[in-house]
Length: 450
Image 1: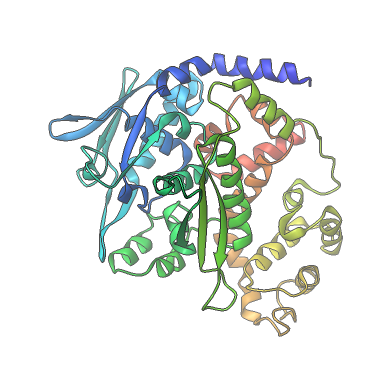
Image 2 (image 1 turned 180 degrees about the horizontal axis):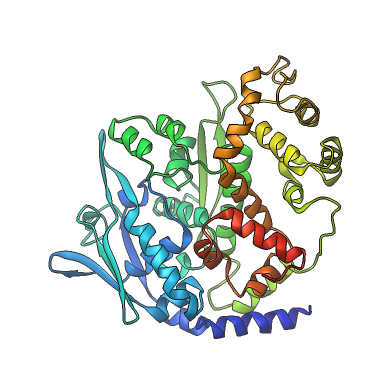
């Protein structure tokens, strides 16, 4: 497809969705929101749609019957979220349910924390979404006098990835320290605390909330959490840090580098230090066509033609696996992709593997039952291998979510979204089950009408 056609199609999709660039500009132009720095560093679970709705709401706060409330028009929500009118009701309903259900943990003073819901209520009627904030959050968003950071709505709504959004919020509050003689500000976080802060664990889990209430450290809270995203350093660096680093450099007024510290506890990374600097973004909210061209260059050129089943194509590049590596594992398994998937998943749980391919082959050939001689040169405990069936059952959604993330990076992903007449965000909200999204993509690849 020619670049010009893609641009025209993209613009037409935006217009038909009621999300023209002028409409977005009219909403965000000159709009600012202010957050207490304690709110910025709060621990909570969220997605990009929730954060954009909250950002928009916080630009028009008002007090009504002693409660802080905000109202958003349907057309504004459509523009900020990039959804069509026919999908808006479902999107706002799901987003509101999530927002009302989230618990916030704010460390209000040394040795003191508060846990409370973000919203008391959200209602949608006659094209208006009205948000009523909880009394707990009010001191951190309204009538602020000190220790706050002001953000431009125009910057926040440009982010595509939630972790870019959250890291931007965290790092932006540090940049005020840059002066005439200083070009970089350093800010350090414990790795597990940072993961809790940007939503890589589910802070709404009962066990997590109980641990917080008992005053457990963030390292302990992280270990207790059942729902974790990108638990290994390799995944965290590739899926979160590198993605956010690129997106901030392209879209935000700050950028960052980072370094790590693993002192004191073996080679495990404990601390990450961000090197924050001012930035002149490469893209601007007014340059829709440039963004479309970039998307085209990223996604539209290649058509993959693998001899692997789709379930294994997703693992190309995972821990350095090549297509030939996966073909070898597939043949070793007797062309049973589930055995290969199980082996890779079990491998991801190990602290260290000396010979990765050898470990995977041994795991497949021994049918997940016999000990293997690869972990730091000694045998794996047999019970670890025997847990694989239970692990696969309980982590089915996590595995599917990883597949879905791989799909979103594929060259034909935008074509798939166009076929579905949806955005990525709307699909993830409407089809919450990641296995369903993966199945839809696979069927589309096979030419099965969805």
